[in-house]
Image (cartoon, rainbow, N blue to C red; front, side):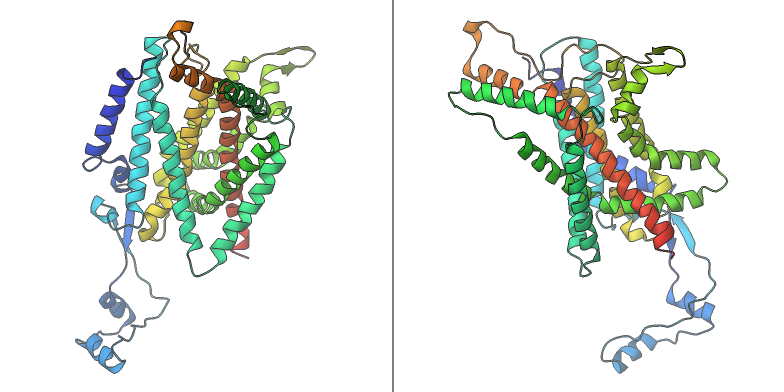
Length: 446
């Protein structure tokens, strides 16, 4: 089993580039300041006075401060003034003062490097053929997913700290709703939702019992399946709370982007597909209308036709999720331009890109740890977990423990967990954005 090899060298190079390149060439900074996004300059007090037919006397501000106990009297002008806002392209200097800009730049740049490392590793593993080397790119994907959750947690925490309890109540309400929804989906038969959780957990329990017995510990298993479902439901409720305001924001940006795209049918079609994509992805795990239909396509009176093999369907599903994520990235600026308050541009960008980055990296983990294939070549191993082969005399206690952990955390277990999480992330984002669409289109204007 090789650990220090080509992948290790590539990882160190990528880590070095992550430290050296972003201060000079940042993908996150380019997304906001490549000249395609503009900000509007608010008028000065002198301009407002001229439009209102008033004059701002010299020294007026100082006099007002003396007359009002040190507090300047505010300037009042009619609300119906007709003026044209001047706009200018957003520059890299403008982004430095934005709230949450450091968090946005770090997340996007790290996710960009993680994606490059993962792609390079996949190409290397394809060219080098079967081997037992650990896939170090999965650590990058796991960190990118963790940083996405951290960014979403920070934004949600900001809503909880506000003086107005409305945002806090919304997050708690959606968390309770998604907890009930998660428990409901976890009891649905796998004849309808094909995650493989039950099979994966059974394999995990059997492997854990055997591993503990090999260590001299008598145990009937780590936890029960019901406890496992409860823990998973609580985690899913937290994800639902984190996705609440990103979904509401996405709905508002979607409506504004459609208004700005009048006369451009191609862009409008892309925006509609982008909004519905999470629902379309989630439907791919509903067995009667996805896998069963593709594997047994009815042809009238003739025998059914199999469009794809079972493995081909899994590969196609991965490609659909990847396509959804890249479509959302391509439409980032179409959604960002409608941000009305420039100071919160990075907050909005995080709410749009953090869920996308999370779904993308969970999909990478699902492919590699779950033993799936891209459909371009047969997988040499069941999953990106090294297989240990050695004679009895060569087995050391460390190798034996590692081999035992392989049996505990098997590809079946990872496929069940990551399939459910991928599906759940798409469902949460679509449900919250659908509610946001209903709120902004009907409730807010009522």
